[in-house]
Image 1 (tube, rainbow, N blue to C red):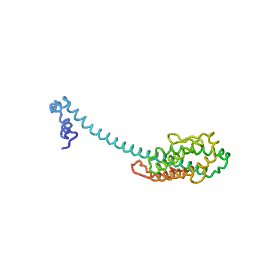
Image 2: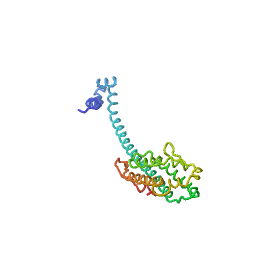
Image 3: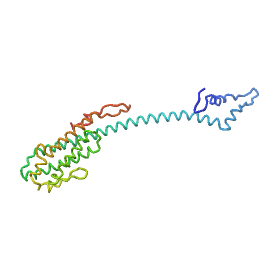
Length: 245
């Protein structure tokens, strides 16, 4: 005997089958099943019927809810992975630009005050790219990216005094601020020590930025995303870093 939420199938069958017990006698009088009448009168018929059909409605709603949850979860995971790939793309792009700017400063010949004045735009770009790289990498939880991020800040902190002499201030959040008028009048020796040649501040920054770029690319290569069927597939790295590699 099957049971639906504590209601036996026999009870249901009795209620529904009793409908057929009413028939017309040969004399034309109507015979009524009194138990059926009592069930209708006291509300038992309504209660059992309501509970019986609610069972199917609940099961359907539950199934639909489960399917919706699965689909939503898969979509959310996929969107999250794509956002992570986008973030890594930004980190790599910013780091590449910083490394390129630092490399140009390294190769700049600094021998006179005129050379210093001619470097203002290059140093301004360096500061801008440095700040953009810090901002992009700040929220990353990748160990290699975090390592490069900390190295950038530590190298800058170690050169804070010299940077101040040429008009570059290190802010509390480790970003840089350039005072162009102060830089133009900075000593050739200080500018040369900071930005010119191997072992300079510019060189160390280029190394750290290049390392961060490689770390972002490697992390993106390992990034995966959910498909709509909740299975993993690799992110298309060529598409994620189009024009950046």
